[in-house]
Image (cartoon, rainbow, N blue to C red; front, top):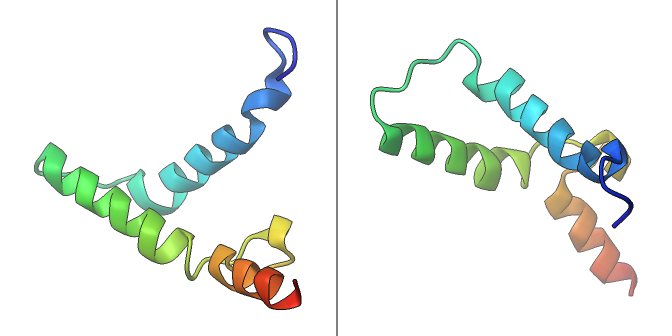
Length: 73
């Protein structure tokens, strides 16, 4: 961790939340908190981690990147 107020500490988290809001939440109206939680959980666990390609992972999904990493080692 760096010094207090260093914006780079939060860059990854802020990028993720921006993506979440842009790709899932903006414009959506959830009927209940439980519906919102399920929707966000499904987005993260099913789409974001398994299917969505990430530029920082050479345009692979985290799941595929991890599989390739462990197959090489």
